[in-house]
Length: 151
Image (cartoon, rainbow, N blue to C red):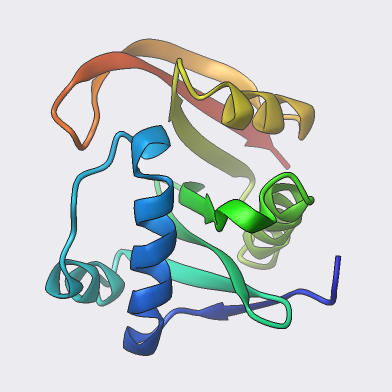
C-alpha cells in the first residue's frame, strides 16, 4: 500500500464520495443521494467526513462523537481498492483520532448480512455490544449489530 493521507472532505470531494457510495450502495442498504444531499451531510456540524488518499482518493468515512464515544460510519472503499488493507488503516486512524481527543470508546454499527465488515471489526478488537432490529436507509427492517471497542 502506498503512503496514505487522511483529510477532511470538502464540497470538491462530493463526486468521489457519491461514486464510491453508489458502488457500495447495496452493501450499505443505501438510497440515492443528490449533490445537495451530500453537501448537507458534509456541512453537518455533528459529523466529520474524511477522505483517504494514496496517489488518488481510495476511501471515505464519517465520524461523530456522542456520549464520549467516537462513532465510525459509512466506511466506503472504492471497489478496486477493497481487500488491500484500507479498512484496517482507517480503523487505526480512527483509534488514534479518539486517543488524541481523550475518547476511550469507539463504536460502529453494521447489519447482520455485512460479514466483511463484521469480520474486520472483530479482527480489530471490537466486540458486539448489541444485536437488534434496525431500519436501514432503504427503509427495510434488518438485524443490526453494534460493535464497541475500549481503548
